Length: 175
Image (cartoon, rainbow, N blue to C red; front, side, top):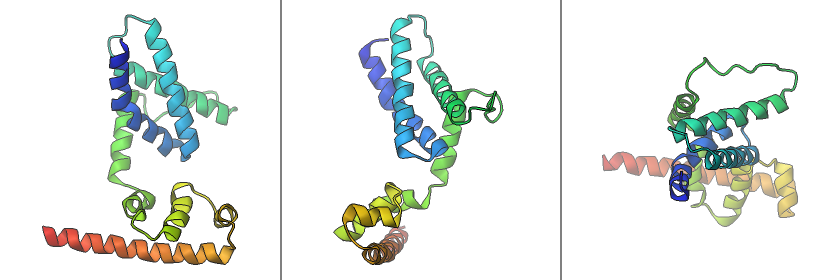
């Protein structure tokens, strides 16, 4: 497999692999690490092998391996870790992502609207919803007191609800 083919495979599957890990571990940093590890292992293996017929299936095999290794480290006492039924892991990941796409979290629904908020509210809500920081952590990072953070968050959520409601009204009127 040449570098161009590897790059295309990476571009095609990066988001799926990252989202799989993110939904499983619920941590942006860990998902990024696992995704990087999976692609690095895949690239290192694929560069040494000439007889890989289905690179996508091989990639998802590496994803499965990385995920299993992560779980084994996390839960050291468990000898075997069952994944829902023994099925093709690639189709398992794709089915999982379809389900996740069909049921987005509140944070995912709010993301497109956060950038339309006033700057202070946008900063606080991004730290809260995207970075998953607690109110006290936000207060420390912004060098503000807890009341400022709570009030700004409350106003941001109120404005966010208005933006979403306004968008939904406009989109329904178009149809």
